[in-house]
Amino acid sequence: MTEHPLGHEDKQYEVEPAKTAKKADGCAERVVEMVVNLDDATGELLGYVIGKMMKLGALDAWGMPIVMKKGRPAYAVSVLVGEDDREKMGEALLKETGSFGLRFKVYERMTLMRTIHRVHTSLGELPIKVGAMSEEPEKVVTAKPEYDAMVKLAEEHGLSLKRVQEIGNAAASHLVDMLNQGNGDDDGGDA
Image (tube, rainbow, N blue to C red):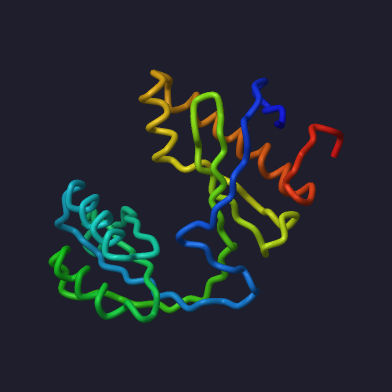
């Protein structure tokens, strides 16, 4: 067992590959950003479109307020997709927004290799996404507790989400320290 930074002991750390695990091998992958400008969309429509695009397989989706010609307030909705999904996702974006057109821009990107560590805390199991430059444990760059799991723990324990985020972030920081020490078997000694 390892001493937790918040003063209790965690039972164990288990590792399983994330569904979205990708290797960071220095090779960039090509992605496409699709953008539509909407001057007639409600906040509800924007939220729906972003959620729908994510459900359809977008890598990411977001909206930004903009000002169009003649001072019209509007939103730019951007959707990031793999090159192979460009046509299918473009058609869906046009259908869902009612826009008459969209723009494409191709980018190259590199992502970290991702794994999910299931950390057992005093609140229960908390999945933490870990990003690393390679499969070597000492190459861990970042870790973040999964949001939906923190919301569930907050509701189950009657705690504020802010408090559960503090616990989750402390657990993530502790996990990164353990993994970067080598094999992940921290005996609680000095680093």
